[in-house]
Image 1 (cartoon, rainbow, N blue to C red):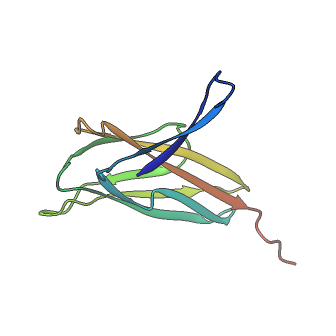
Image 2: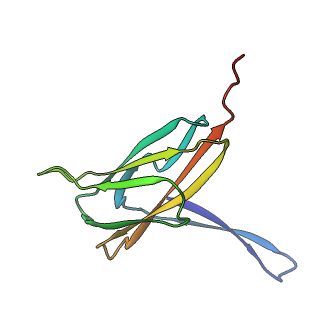
Length: 132
């Protein structure tokens, strides 16, 4: 990974410098998709599944799931099947009227490297088309 940082100084000859930091980064888990964006019409049920697969080197267990904003989204945490390591989160959103729902799912882990992780979820419900 490479990151560039703008450093401002009081040196008249070098008032700004770019500091580049480069180094290897291990992936602790694969989260697919990393964020969830759902779209539909009022009255529709919108659903998605997120998978979380811990890396072999940094294996962890998910201890729980909370919603930061306490939205009306329904979520369920599904442990890996026997012999597997991939966790699943089922997400279900329902609204009878047009509007947006937003929340962040916070997953607690037993990992010292990643004690919690967040997944953003948004659902946009558009007006139902009126029929004559």
